[in-house]
Image (cartoon, rainbow, N blue to C red; front, side, top):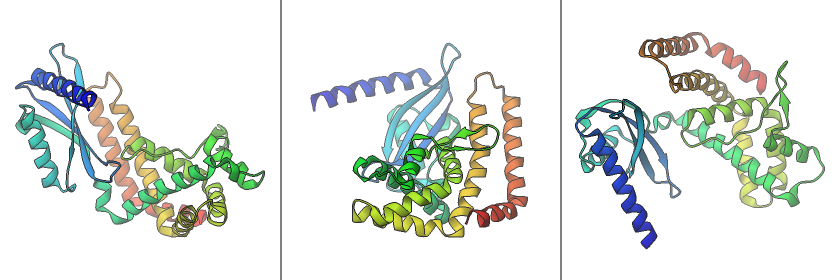
Length: 279
């Protein structure tokens, strides 16, 4: 308890110094919503500002638990956090967030839930060494989880079924791309777990995942989100590079918007064709 109190005191002092450095100046906000281990919604807040040495700083100032992810609830929580640190939302000159946006679309939400489940199920199966036998299933599990399956023409690229972070574009993109490339192999592992999983819960999970995998909805979302995230993830990486000026950043953003608009206008037919082919 004493150690926890000491850490909390240090954290408060660090946050106090960060906010004191901003003082009456303007700053940007980076807000990211996720769930804690008890599945309660929480919001992490980071401030972005230019310090006295003209260096752009990004500093974490707190985590706030919220009852839901409605915009009014999030605004109220941000207002309260800033006020407690002697800052005002009137000083904010830009904000970036991932506050449950995907949850507004039930189909996308379901897709991401199953995306997480498939990695967890395959990983749990692999970790049980006593289950692994010299079969095709054993070989596939090892190749999937250790990145030994080689795919792609020319580059002969190695791909593993990466685990997605909770709200990170890059990690979701890697997971979706690897699942697209390893789809038949992942189905093989899930079929094995469905029949020979070490507990009823694991077998039930695999059965549910396989049932969803057979739906056009899942395969279509897999292609859709893979394409969308390929654009947004590339943009995010470019914007995080040092030396990017405002004009270059604006051109990158406009280019991404045009690509996404073209995808919306002309991309669905080709996605459906690829989805039917995978099924």
